Image (cartoon, rainbow, N blue to C red; front, top):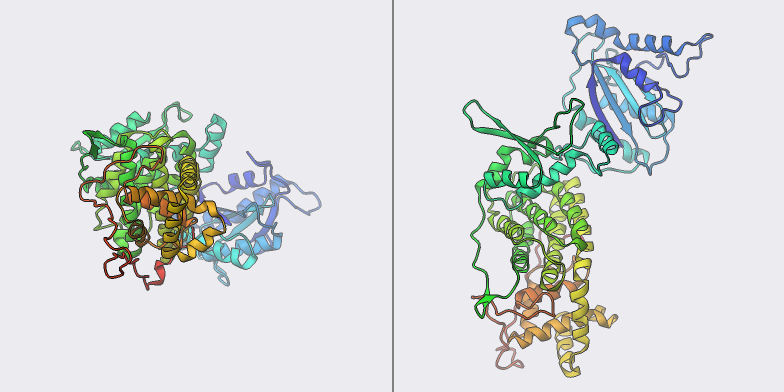
Length: 590
């Protein structure tokens, strides 16, 4: 149940619309379902001997405006409170009596007409469709004072959540006032008329976020905006200092032929110029020199940057479990930038899902937890590197490292959902889970070819080597091994990865234990897939198994086979991280 509140100054004009044919949806049988005293005249169902709807409507408008006229100059200029309340398309059709209850509870909740108060404001509720009503109230009380209506939207939202529960309707997620402004009805209708897939406000919000992803300076940010084709207008103080900015879409004009400008703060609370400056103040981490072998880079720039981002994202998942709130909130902002960077440089096969993931997660980056005292330079640097490296081809090593990164980002977004849920951030948790669902779909698209190749390689291994690695899996992952045995091909990619790691000088068992210890696996949709990408990242194996592998980075030693693998005293064992006792550490299953 969604309430939308507006204010105006024309009681009669609004009634004419409510009882008229409608501008978009056809108004069917408009009639009152409730009023301040239960006896208000109803232009839609006037039962007098000689009914005149226009005259009845004028009498209703006069009755509603009575106290406004009595208050004279003390009455507010915008004295009309208008609230439309709509049920979900999947909800049952409410009766007139139920809608009357809804209207009475809402005018009570916002303090317009408290129950039992004889001086409450006058109001009516008009129904002209099955799924919604309009509440019209005049904001002057019987004692000619104005009602105290602070936070009327929040109060109406909270009451709607209670009504949904009591009436068995679809229960929406409670908000906290940190969401971005949604397009108005006029903006949506205009988008439909002009053939746009969405309102300009939404297109601009996404374009500004993508321009901000990994940006190092304010000048670079505005350069990116212009390069994206947006119109940009700066707002300056008398001193010449920039105070803010406005953006507009080319071709989006008002009735006077002028561009329709949107301030950054009206696109989203964190896109105002002061908020952007705070984010840019931290800068980005210094980029490491690209890894080389035989005097030249082994991976393409897109693949190299995605590999780097994978390790950074893994550490962020740990921070969301173990870090304090302000640090975690800051990391979520950085994750949003990373998703925007990946989305705008993704290949065509995954672009739509990644764009949807970035758009959904945008809601998860804002809450009332202040993102302070946290170093997000690594995430911002990863986003910057991905943007500067350009798009991945979607095949070969580029496509494989995209799958590697997406597998980790699924984990990160689910950790974000758990973090928000533990703090009562319902909308943000839901947005995080939506992002995870889109990322899963994109992952399956990106991983299809490299995983198929790995399965083939695992099946083609000599029987003795294959049995050795399967024994390792049963030793280290007994539960997963038993579950995977029911579907033998599920372990083929993992077996092939362990074999390739061993060929590079790593001890498969020690490397597998190290991969397990990185983070819990309970949230994994497919444990084997997660471990394949962790192992390939740790061992510096090619993400696409058809590509040549690269030498380990400086400072990363192969996990050597112990001199005596049969000796418990000499065999190294990387123990998995102990379970965290805090109940918030258990994330939902992915």
